[in-house]
Length: 223
Image 1 (spheres, rainbow, N blue to C red):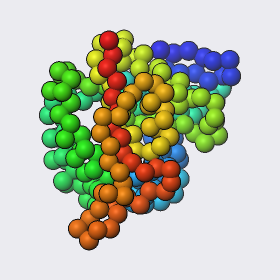
Image 2: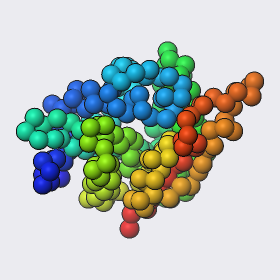
Image 3: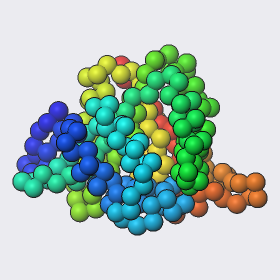
Image 4: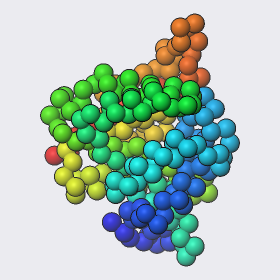
């Protein structure tokens, strides 16, 4: 998977030795930028840590399917695609773990994601026993606009094919991730509009900023 482009950006599987560098990248970028995180103030500023987000990210990286982009001789992490595999029973385990989370904002976000996925019964629907999940694609603000997100997506799909996966899924929570997934051939199979997702008092639970107005679960079958 490793290669180097003419502009000195290299790509490869994330090794264990770089896990902490990836977490540092996510703290500065994805954790605070992701639309649902921002809507509820989960990570209030760049660099803010979040133990549960970091634990989930580490668990995903340990599955050996995640990619990173590094820049120049300094080998700085400037982009990541955190990919993982989901099997039957994983959603139920995640729900049990979520119930013990001490952070109500974290429970709110992943409660929505779990609820939306639970409705779909993807294993039965597509007759598969494992799903390749595109969980996080993040690019450092200093190198945005250079196509790194699309390249990380392309390489992730290539990896899924090489590993023999038949179904790819992404829970896309913002307009930009939805557009990127669509460009890679993923199609939405379930949509939740944020302004219809309300608490018992009728208050919108996720007051996201435009243009991020929905959660779309998107999939692609690999032939």
